[in-house]
Image (tube, rainbow, N blue to C red; front, top):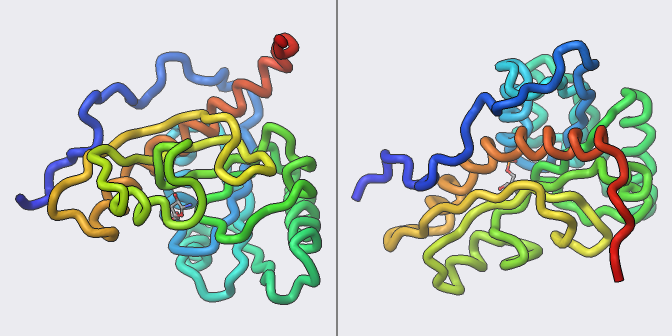
Length: 226
Ligand code: GRF
């Protein structure tokens, strides 16, 4: 069967615009994105801001590879991009310190890891508590870590998907903000399934950013029980 139809949102439950837009008089969120690859999620965030789906602005992109699609997209979109090559940093912590300096310099409210292929340390996580998000190509808590798409195919699941979540020191284990599911079709290979998942990533990531911002605005909740 040709894959031109959108099989990815059987519920149709995630719709723009959301019912209660953020108050327009609030300052737009200042967003940073970290990417290592193609940067399609980075571009989706920029587009969501431009379309008014997210009251924010991507003020800087950090990449760890000089030659990556995300950097080319940033040039086209006119977004400042900084290359911080991990191979030139003495440690993971030093890489994270360089990122923190970049983001503080741009007065960033929220940081989005969108295909950042390095493990971050508590140095970065603690600098942006509740403000560091990641997008992962599986329905967490299934298929954490590298290549969630391949893991889903190997496991023979019939539903795959993506998760936008807060980042904690344990990889792919922070609070889930938004998920979307897609069917796995018989003829799927990694590329086809990943493409279907990515269409959903581009939809849920702006929503997750907004939810994270709303959580911050609401302040700390009651202390955990037990
Ligand atoms: C996405 O599938 C994301 O879930 C994973 O890396 C991929 C990045 O894609 N963490 P892109 O660079 O945003 O196109």
